[in-house]
Length: 138
Image (cartoon, one colour):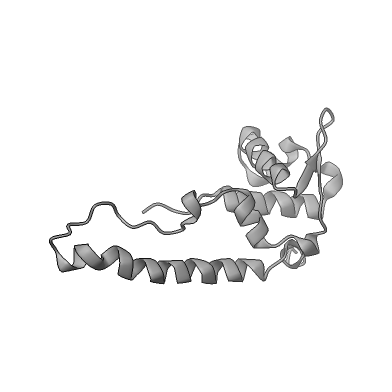
C-alpha cells in the first residue's frame, strides 16, 4: 500500500523547529532533528520557500518564518509540499473491466466518496495552526 509522502511530516517538523527555536535553524540543525539527509531538508525548504512560508538566509544559513505560526495551517504546509499528485489523494485503479457491472461503475460511484473524504481531511488540516502544534511540545 502506498502511503502519503513523508514530505508533509518533515515539512511540519521543519516549520515547527523554526518556530520553536529560530536562531539555530540551519539545514544541518534541522536535518539532525528530523534525522535525515540535509539534501532532503533543502528540497523541502525550497518548496516551503516557493509557497511563501519561509525565508532562507544564504551563506550563514538558517531560516525564518515569513508568517506568524498562528497564520500557518497544516493545510498550507500540506499544499506547499505537493503531497498528492493531480490534487487527488485517492486514485482509482486503471482500466477496470467495462463488461462487469462493478468494473463499469466503480470509478463513478467511488470517486464521489473519495472526494468527500479528501475534502474532510483538508478541512481538518485547515483548522490546526503551526502555533497550536508547537504549544503542545514539552
